[in-house]
Image (cartoon, rainbow, N blue to C red; front, side, top):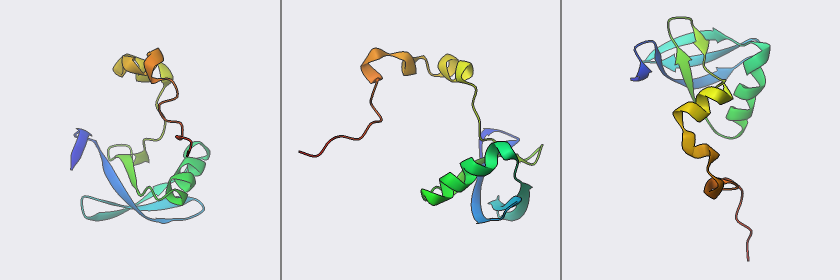
Length: 93
């Protein structure tokens, strides 16, 4: 399943080790090394029950970071005042 580009797809996390993560990508198991920059993000995702992760098959790496400038360029609506606090929990009454 190519979601973003021919080299980018989604991987299903099967197992997380100390130095690597086992993914299933297009029905093939792949071991991807973890770096200091993405280790905590992967652990947090799995803890929250998120097992799908963007994967770059050309470079055999996880796509975990997005530069803020690129985010605002691609999704300018994120800067709208009307959306501030939209992801905060709604208090129970």
